[in-house]
Length: 400
Image 1 (cartoon, one colour):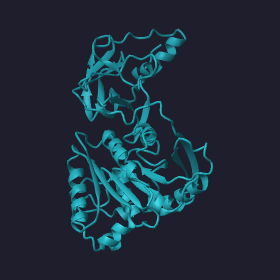
Image 2 (cartoon, rainbow, N blue to C red):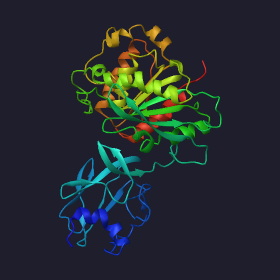
Image 3 (cartoon, helix red, strand yellow):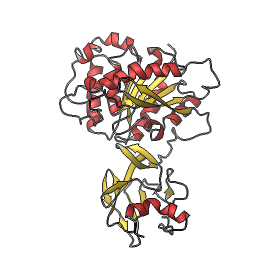
Image 4 (cartoon, rainbow, N blue to C red):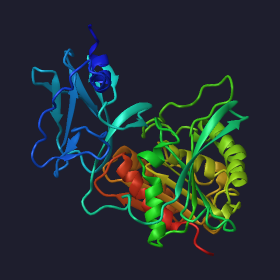
C-alpha cells in the first residue's frame, strides 16, 4: 500500500493504533530542552530551550523537502530515516504561530494544538517569559468563555461571538457589569483573543488581584460585508503612504457592531447598557477599527484602546479640525467626553510604531490626553497585545 507523505504524517498515530503501522521513533530530547505547553499528549516535540531557541520535529519519510514556516521558510534536516528536525535561533518570549511546508504543501504540526492565525489554521509554540505570569492559569476564581451565534441582517449571514463573563457572574444574578468589546487583527477571528491572547486568564488574574473591575469582554468577528460586496478581509496597507479612509473601509463592520452586536449583548447578558460602561479596543486592524468606529460613536463608547494600531496611524499628517468631522478639534470638550484614549506598541514594531507615535504626538500637541504604553522588546505579536490588554483593563470603569 503506497501512501502520500502527507497521509503518512497525518495518519501515523491512527494507523499504529489499529496495527497497520509502526510509530516512528523521534530523536531523543536534547538536554536542557522543555516540551512546549501546546504539544499534544504523548508527543515529544516541539521543544524550547531556556535561551528562547525552539526545536521542531516532523516524521515524513517520503518527503523530499520539509521546511519550517516561521516568518520565512527554513529548510529542516533529514536524518535519512524520515525524521526532519530544526532548531531556531532565540525567538523571544510569547506565542509564535508556525507551520510545516512539505514538498510545497503547507500543513499544521500534527503534534500540537491548532490555532487560527495568518488567515488559516496553523500550529503555535509558547516561549515562556521569565518572571512574567500575568496570563498564567492560576488557582484564582475563573470566569467563563461562552460562544454565541446570531444572525446578522446587515451581512445576511450567521456570525459568532466569544464572550468572557467574570468570576461570580452566575452567583450574583442581580449584578450588572460593564463591557469591553475587543477586536482581533487581520488574518485572525473571534476566537484568537481567548486562545492565543489569553484574554480570559488575563482578566481572571487582574480581577483576583483587585487590579481591575469585573467586566464582560465581547470578542466579535471583525469582518463584515453587505451581500454582493467584497468582504474587506484584506490586510490594511503599511505605513507611509496616503492615509486610507478607514471609516469607509470599516463602515459595515461598524454598522454590525453598533446596530447588532451591542444590542444583542445587552439583551443576552447583564450589562450596564450605557456609554460610560462600554469600552472598545483592538489589536492591529482591530485597533484601526476601534478608532474608525469609536470616534464616530462616542455616544456608545467612553473608552478607546488601540494596540499596535489606531485609525490615523497610517500615512500623512492629520488635521484635527476635520478628522472625523472635527471630533477632536476642541481638546477640552473631547477630554471631558472621553474617559480614556489608549495607544500601545511593541518597541520592535518599527513602521507601525512610527505611525502610532505620530498620531499620538499630533493629538497630544493639540491638548488631547492620551495614555501610551510600550511593550519592551516585542514586535507585532501576541506578547505585545497581551501586555497591552494587561495595562489597558485596569484603567477601565472606575467609579466616577
